[in-house]
Amino acid sequence: MAEQAENKRNRRRPPRKGSSLWHDALRYLLRQRSAILGLVILGIMLVVAIFAPLIATHSPTLSMLDVPEEVEMGVRRRLPPCIHLLGCPEEQPQHILGLDSNVRDLFSRIVYGSRYSLYIGFASVGFAIVIGVLLGAVGGYLGGWVDNVIMRIMDVLLAFPTLLLAIAIVTVLGPGLVNALLAIGIVSIPAYARVMRASVISIKERDFVVADRALGASPGRILVRRILPNAITPMIVQGTLGIATAILDAAALSFLGLGAQPPTPEWGTMLGAERTQVFTSPHLVFFPGLMIMLVVLAFNLLGDGLRDALDPRLNR
Image 1 (tube, one colour):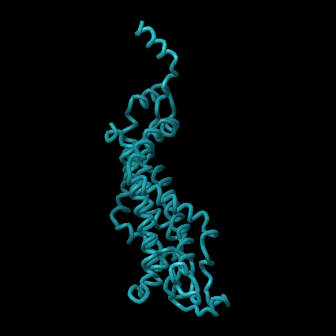
Image 2 (tube, helix red, strand yellow; image 1 turned 60 degrees about the horizontal axis):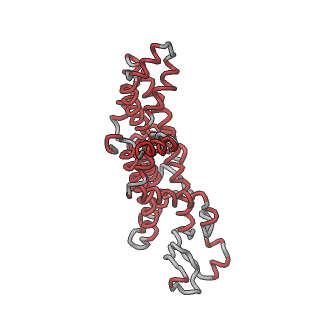
């Protein structure tokens, strides 16, 4: 009788839905404290970037010398941080992170700088992933001389240090944010092409691909419908980690005067403009450097978490 009752209860229960790779990956990702910390930092950065006009207290490019009220209160260059609630004198103008050498509000420039840094990271890595996936997939699937030509070109690009090659490209194209993005994307293509090629080579001989080929499916259909969806997982991890590298490279180019040009509120440009004030006005260097460190740390933590979550060997 007990067995019959148990069987009836089991029949009444709805069938359990199978979990997908992404559902399992999200569950494993949310179990890692480091990945959660990275998500929190990135979430805050995204909110700041989206609502920058509401969060910033001043225009990021406006000099306080052009504001009569600020001039009357004795505004000056490289003013240290002043918050009235924390004891700053009321007669002194309030600027949360102080003023830079051009008498612009540092807090507002850092807030707007989050937009540029995230844009640089996503745009340059997105460009590199699209080109790298295309080259790696075509080379890995076709093989032969096509694969050899593509990979030899990638080897030539990999023979140069990425930052030096980016500097050379920007020097040829001319300084500017768009050219810096293009240079960073170009030097990042080989890494994504090689990762995609390795994934395609490991997948194209599997049974489900061989079955499609035997049924007469075209090479393009097999590549797009079968191989790419199963080979894209390593690209997500590589892309997340690559965004951090792209942001660092863009900051380095801007620091050297080859990236975003003044008065653009980009963190690397801010560091380059105030590098001589590290001892006299350390807040002008500390806060932009801190923001670069936080956003790079967040993407690295998230990338490590994704790598572990998407690797089934570490989750079984």
